[in-house]
Image 1 (cartoon, rainbow, N blue to C red):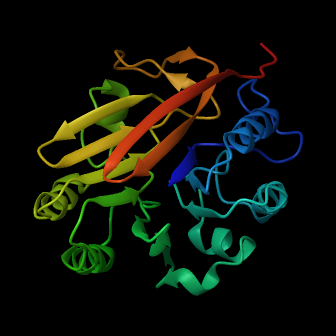
Image 2 (image 1 turned 90 degrees about the horizontal axis):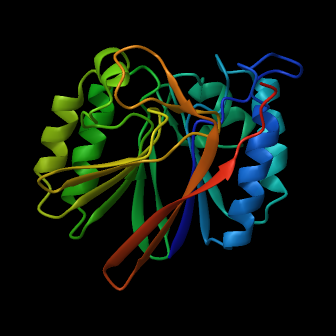
Length: 248
């Protein structure tokens, strides 16, 4: 099974200034690189929009994705609107009380998708997650926007972390197998492990944040995608970087 993860597109409205970065060109560049990897599946893991959910932005992204001829799934980030997103991508049937969380089967393996739009994993979603993991007699693969562990990135950990990460960790720690979590949100590349929880943070299609600063600081404008291989009980994954398109 080969999956490509793309995250934190931050696509703006047509003509909107997006911090001097051509986010649409960046997304198309990453999407072309993803196509060349010939994955079985592709995941867009949140923050598709620059500031807030916008149907026109979702429609533009949907048009690009439909031209890929690769099965794909989406999840909502803190700059998204899950209901609006689900409607634009034809996934309204997956909504539960306005939240977009669900499970899919990739090459015979269950994959879970969580909704952290509000900065938490809701109680209803936690209950669903417990049920999903209880029935899973193997390692778990989960996609969510916010990392469920602190990542050693002071600006993000102190101001923009998942607020109920302790509760989510408890659910993951109760699973008797490894829980492999693929996230975005932090605009860095990082791997964090706590017991059976392994979190892979994938870099943004926008810009990357300085990992040592207490204040907001752009580290660089290179963009990336994550390629995940999982076959015969062996998981390998790597981040591939591209030069971003800026007007700076």
